[in-house]
Amino acid sequence: MAKVSMAIAALGVTLLLVAGAWAQTPKKKNLPKSQKGACCEEVRSLKVQVANLSSILEELGRKQETDLLTVVRQVMELDKQNRQQEARVTEAESKYSEINNRVEILQLQGAQSITQTSSDVMYDCASLYAKNYRISGEYKLPKDDFLRTPELTVFCDMETNGGGWTVIQRRRVGLTTFDRDWKQYKKGFGTVRGDFWLGNEHIYRLTQQATVLRIEMEDWAGDTRYAEYGSFSLSNELNSYKLLLSNYSGNAGDSLRYHNNTYFSTKDKDHDKCVDDCAALRKGGYWYNCCTDSNLNGVYYRRGEHSPRTDGINWYGWHGSSYSMKRVEMKIRPHSFRP
Image (cartoon, rainbow, N blue to C red):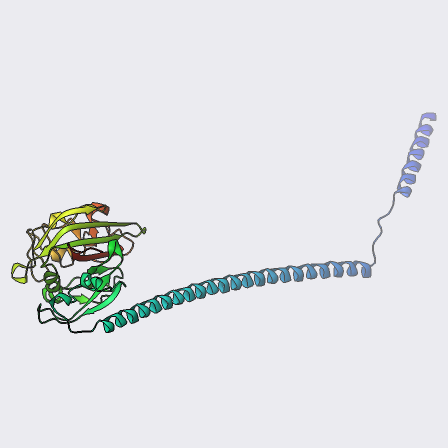
């Protein structure tokens, strides 16, 4: 009985302790609904503001990028206009120089327009040089009944290696095709201030005296070479303007010797020494053998390389068979010429 009483007392004490501990535990406070709603509204407002700021920043970024692209385009356009202006100035200066040269040439011709004897004939650029015409440019050689020479417009180089050169061929622009027929190569074609062939009949006439041939070449890197032949002549049309040359000198390599003692061929007159039609294959008129070591009247390919074709403006001794020159000039003067 005493033990039961003690157990009841202990149980009571335990219940009192538990009740006291429960009474001391803090109760959860519930926020008023009004305060809870206000807090959510502030969060939503902040989120909206952040989204708006992000949108504004993105818009500013896009605008800056657009403005930058606009500025770049404007700079590029200004640079293009500047280059065009420089090109116009250069062209104007060139035209002015050309006009000035022509005026001086006309003044010289006017001053010397007197009755000529056979020794006064303006036969070629060397004879013009001997009469103190020392400006490179276009000249008109008058018809001469004494020598039976027709009026002929020529381009004279009065500067290179002493001057006095009559230019018989030029390639530098690429707008004139040289894939022509026999009659056109006989008479000549093109313009003497651009790309042209003087004409086989005129070249034949000009080489009836001992003549020097000079060939000047430039590649697409701006390097230049030349080949000079101390003896150069053409036969008449009955002999198909046969090429005879010798005495090479220069730094381009002797790539015309292979064509020595050959007849001129065009796409409508095949006189080469080959089973193939070299003029048709090489796309020009030339002294083809079987077929070429050079092809100065071939196709004008820009930027040089034209592999696997072999129909460009080639000079095998310098760049081989698959490289087309940027510029070529063939010019002649009498062997007896002295500056």
